[in-house]
Length: 249
Ligand SMILES: Cc1cc2nc3c(=O)[nH]c(=O)nc-3n(C[C@H](O)[C@H](O)[C@H](O)COP(=O)(O)OP(=O)(O)OC[C@H]3O[C@@H](n4cnc5c(N)ncnc54)[C@H](O)[C@@H]3O)c2cc1C
Ligand code: FES
Image (cartoon, rainbow, N blue to C red; front, side):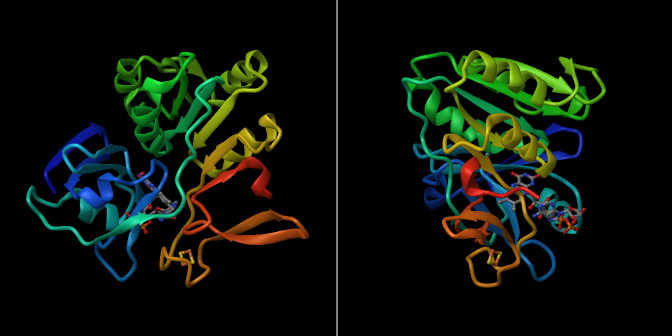
């Protein structure tokens, strides 16, 4: 571990030096040994192939993330990755919008960092949080040149409510716009519902995981198969899926 920051209360961003991880596609994840038997999946928030550094921004919610948050500088971490399928690069000629809720925002920032310079139209980032102090990476998105809309559940910053209201307005103005979303399942379900579950609406799912490499089936979700509903492994077929690939309960 080469750098550590606290971007918001209860949240930590760790940088590790690993040219292999730094070459990940945004939306892929690291499977990290912490305390206990199971590894913990965490997305990449920053990927820098020049320095060979990759960062992970996570909320401290339990035993594994607490252990990780307390690692000292110079600690050697046991990380499997990059794993899973990341976000496809948007068509630069068409508008695109990033929609993130809570710790769903960091992988979208990794994507924005790689894609923004090629965009022909100013991209929009819609960032949602429970309250003002938990809005992640807002300044970083502004520095990339994004139009940034903020929502908070309690109205302490930006618009009161969820990211779905601003996304509906963005889609009304950009009916053919490409959408990239990451956040809680309820948020993704709503994104799928208002966007019509299209093949250019991409969502990164968070699911409890076991092996992380497709063997245990702990992470399956319901897919929209050619012959009816089927199961998709979030760790290998995902975590990024298009809206048309999924069936939300
Ligand atoms: C592909 C993927 C990418 C992820 N990326 C990030 C990220 O960038 N930043 C981040 O903060 N978190 C991310 N998560 C969630 C993260 O993996 C969990 O918060 C973490 O595993 C919790 O471990 P713990 O030991 O601290 O918590 P535990 O003690 O195991 O559990 C504490 C709480 O967290 C919940 N939880 C545990 N695992 C998950 C999980 N996989 N998904 C959702 N809730 C969980 C539990 O239900 C419980 O409420 C990601 C999850 C997946 C599947
Ligand atoms: S976590 Fe084991 S198959 Fe996905």
